[in-house]
Amino acid sequence: MFRKLFYVLLLVFILPSPILELHSQNQLKASPIFKNGESQIVPEFSDETKWIREDLWVETDFDTDGDGKPDRMHVDVTRPKQTQTEGLKLPVIYESSPYYARGGAPFSQEAFWDVKHELGEKSKPRKHPEVIGTINRPIISNSQIKTWVPRGFIVVHSSSPGTGLSQGAPTIGGINESLAPKAVIDWLCGRRPGYKTPYGNETVKAYWSTGKVGMTGTSYNGTIPLAAATTGVEGLEVIIPIAPNTSYYHYYRSNGLVKSPGGYLGEDIDVLYDFIHTINDKTKRAYNNSTIRDSEMINGMDRITGDYNEFWAKRDYLNHMGKMKAAMLMSHGFNDWNVMPEHSHRIFKKAQEMGLHTNIYYHQDGHGGPPPLSMMNKWFTHYLHGIQNDIKNAPKAWIVRENDPQTNPTPYDDYPNPDAKPVTFYLTQGAPKTGTLSLTPPNTDATETLIDNYSFTGEVLAQAEYSNHRLLYATPKLNNDIHLSGVPEVTIKLSCNKPAANLSVWLVSLPWNKGKNVKITDNIITRGWVDPQNNHSIWHSTPLEKHQFYTISFELMPDDQIIKKGQQIGLMIFSSDKDFTLHPEPGTELTIDLKATSLKLPVVNGIDAIKKSITF
Image 1 (cartoon, helix red, strand yellow):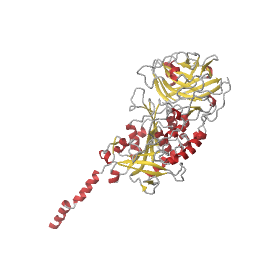
Image 2 (cartoon, rainbow, N blue to C red):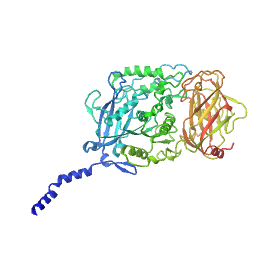
Image 3 (cartoon, rainbow, N blue to C red):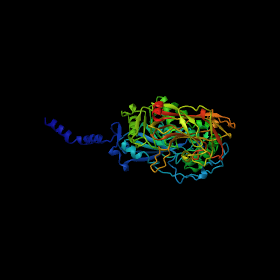
Image 4 (spheres, one colour):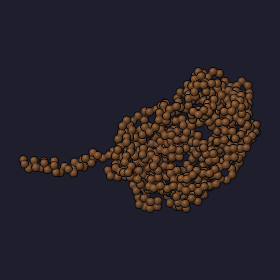
């Protein structure tokens, strides 16, 4: 009896101490915390001084810098120490960019194309600046880290091909910019080795990764998640692209017209190449310039006709979505005149057609603007941690209304609003003042003529009571608010006194607000541009026969906006848009056949809403 008691006491007071200590350690192991379907900040993950930060290189399957070796991408990792000390595995939020090594002042105007020349003529040669990159190690970027590492994610960045310490060449939408993030994801999932040095053989394994990856980023950084997703790479579960450029043709051209992105007059795809070509190994630059910029781009970009071609088709991600299986939360601003909202709309609709889980978040501001953090958190938590929440049952569209903060979007069943129906408006004479938009076509044939002059901005033309340089047609004042949701479309029958002309269309809210409290949602509702030479196809342009009439239909940018009571909806037709198009010598005449010209607006509740709001 005494011996049994002795052994019991021995087990309780002597032997258990290391066992209890081990049990205590197990209890104290940090792990992600979830509440209301979201990942919560974990105190043990929040001490920045204890984060593990490292960089490495992941080998790809392509060689774009011509050295006979597969290009390697420079990658950084930021992870909680528990992934090292406690064997913790976590999912990854990954952002890739061509901009991480970009430093110094913006380009001078000489680095952009000269837009002041006749349509169909070559521009003067531009200068190619030498870009010196800013190299940071071991952390390429600090984006995403403070948001997601404390919430139980690992954050990874990579520099895209030909930028920073990544090898290869930038191609601005070429296939290597899709395969590069795919390679990094393959490494994160254990299917490909990483290396400690750019050319060495000592490997690095992502043993701390669960093999679940989500991607996000804004602008070019938002394009790369879509590029990666189009490869169908296993492990990429969800992407959240913010204002992504989904087609470089749509960025630098519009319906056959040479067009600059807003704020960057004279930029083209080769200008962007120069801007991001920051590869640290300067011995590779001459080869990259020769094979990509001065050969593939110059031969394919076609600033003469502006036509769509195979060069542009390869850089249009809509054409490559067949393998995509990642879920997608898309984000964009309706007043983004740099990467315009059509970029997101076209991909969102295609993803829906493919049966992918996809939602869209639109706000009323300009370039950038992520979804609310809570929304992003739920998407990453569901797809990367496997936590069940409400995102699968949530509305498909979230739209920030005009006076609301971006953190407070209004839910809708879909975008465009399912209750929106097309309403067609017709034009009646008024030039050089303002004509009328009405619901009935004019009874008699009538034409009106405008004279191109790029020196007048669209804003000036829309405010002018009298102008020969634009045609303006407006509804009567609205008796009630009108909700537009979707993609307006215009059909214009025109003739020209020259073989080529720019054609620009703005949809505006009048009277123009010039007060100190003007908002981004005032004045310009949406807009669009087209080359009349492409009246049959964006693939082929045909010179216009003098004074022969041509009919062309095209879409304006998607929008969702409430036009307030007391305003008028105006359609403005003009030629060269000072901030976006080429600047030919003033004097080109465009004549519009009013009887065959119309505007189709997507109006919530359709014709009934119009009849209640407008007295003709």
